Image 1: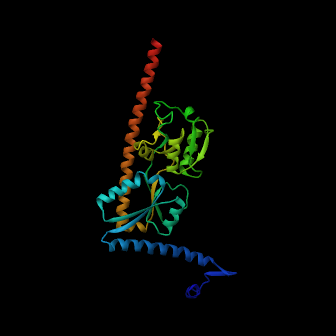
Image 2: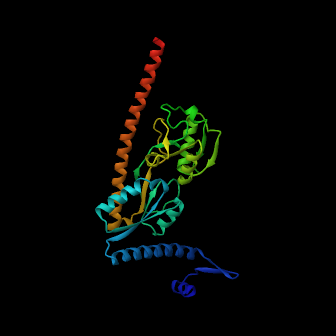
Image 3: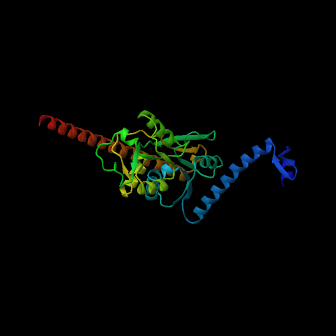
Length: 297
């Protein structure tokens, strides 16, 4: 079959090396095209299957871990209310794998912090939500209930740091430099949120999370955010898609729900930070008033 294909195209696609075949430059170009074609066929089959079951169609999201706790669930809830007949599949994988699947058209869009991977040429990138960062600990940690926490004290603690090469790790290293240097007790390196939550509940350690994820676990009673000023996030969560794939009505509706969810989370985060700043100012005034009272006495 390969020989017939090469004869039809009039170009050598593979060359033999012993008992194996290696693609020529023309063969590699054809393989890239074939991967996109196969991806399109798979997505078309998914959509036809959904329509055959009486549904409107299907869409597939490739999601980074940071988007899976607030942004994607909120968007899917909006979509479920507006168009319950649309089937959505979510794939949570490393960003490099998601980019490869997007280029092969095996997924419709990516929702994640993308960082530096090379995107396909016709990719459109939209920022959806830029959550701030929180320093977190387990509820039993001595700093968990302190009304005032300062960075010298924070940097003396044992830390779980995100994996090297991730946007969150780069952002945390910047924070450390800004506040006097890296803690000496960074003994664990992990970007696994379930692993980190378990460790933080078993040991007096600190770590870092996006504010929306930290709030999710705080509501469950398994994490606490330290009372520190707002820390900017390392990079926004974005929606990336190929311009040709945005033409499908089902995908367009899903993208609208993601944009709406991003706006709502941004507004909620801004309101929360305003309330937190007010509370910190009130605590500072109360502390100042107590010091003045002690001096008068």
